[in-house]
Length: 241
Length: 100
Image 1 (tube, rainbow over the protein chains, first blue to last red):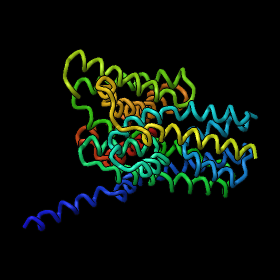
Image 2: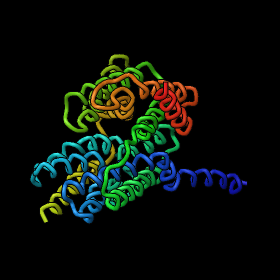
Image 3: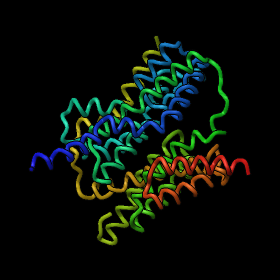
Image 4: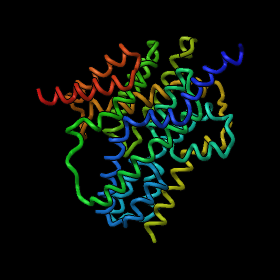
């Protein structure tokens, strides 16, 4: 009896494995691939060899940082400046890593080392939404991380092969896919006035940061600023999220 | 050669930022920090979503993208965030609003 009841439960656990996490990234593949193509085209224009273009995508695996680097290299910047710009662009991953750490703390260190490698804004969003909904798992999060890699690398390969500029993807709404997915993850979390307040403050900080700060620092500003507002507000009211 | 060194430096820095806390951390934060961390997903999701709708190019602009965001937010609210429906509604609203 007990065994028979346990079976379907195990089945539903299988549904939240790494494959489910990888599958959740599928809507992001066209946008990711296009981003990869555009990166590769501009990297080739900046003088990187095909091996360097693909090597950077495989080793660094960070879209905005790679764009910034390629632009700097095209402008004649040296290694130190480019690495510094990469650190600045990717500083938000400190916050993202801290936010995910409690959910994967029980996994072995080697697992966490692999997990960190392909972490992205998108996979962070998909995994965290599931964790907060109560049906997330480290395996699902790892699958989401890995799922964002194929379109990014395939896009770079296509870009190297193509070697020329593309028609503007913005016309077809492809670059709205990312924001739409984050919106669909955000809205279910807006259950209290405080949560709505944090979202509004963060959104406003992001817009201010985009206009005033370099690269992706608007994310760090909004992430830290919104969280501080939420924590102070909560302390003022003495209730949890 | 310099380019490969640059790439390796970029890879090291990126991995350190991604993995530093994940690999070394115990996943436990002091209460005041944990309280703030609870809001990080909301804050980051909002920061990742909003500019795409209100700042499609390099300045704030209320256009087809904003219409798409509004329609998608309504669908997300009514369906408690069914990603596929939100995506379909958002892209459809964008394409319609662009024609009008």
